[in-house]
Image (cartoon, rainbow, N blue to C red; front, top):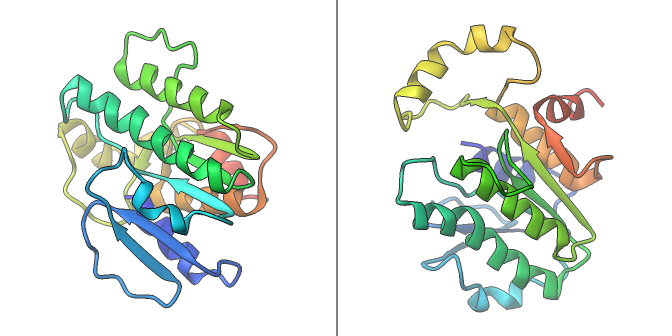
Length: 208
């Protein structure tokens, strides 16, 4: 929903010279700047270590919806996947900026009863302390998918229909997938004054 838009922004940018995209399935996307790697195991990045030196930015958008998988798998995808990538990348490119797509309500005390909040807080803590020159975490509210898709559950189907009303609630609660991707790209390329970007902070990036 967001990663694909972000990838296209990178490919379209004159400032970006090369893109390494780690995917679960082959996309057949072709571009002179693009090296696409299909990974079977997102906890082991030894096979791509030769591609990791001299990176400037890492955009991490992989995730899973709460309830879509068992609890242990949810934690593995939410915490272990990005942490193992970060551990490998920081050995070769500590100067890189790491941009994590997190979520509204992430709890850095790691005490929340909500799995989503607790595990998002845990991975934010781990990546903040791992040693990158810059780390940014993005906590959007409801993300309106500009590109039509099959919604993952009933709540998202309703939210999509109610988006005009959610938008009226203010800048704290929602944004579009294009706005999110554009803000992540801008922060990755130019930095930002905060490590944690809540929904309103993400939108503020687009006004600068």
